[in-house]
View 1: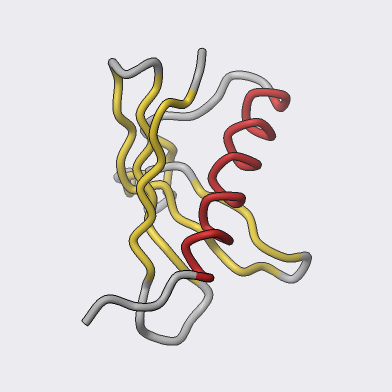
View 2: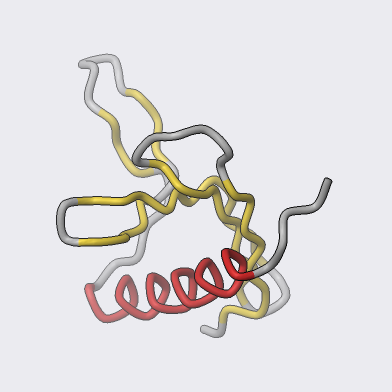
Length: 90
């Protein structure tokens, strides 16, 4: 599995959520609405989720193992950092 595209949309308002990201896997499959969040220990990603009937949020799509999650997170956060260095479009 290779992430072939990362699209970062910065969030203008103040808060913990810093960006919303879409990734393309192998030029064939897209995952939208991955969130970049500022936590107590730094930035991390939250996979797309849906509120269940019990009020809990459950991931719609997510990596099966921690190595894959870490790889996806690194790629997304690297692209997020690059995007933050670019001037805002008006």
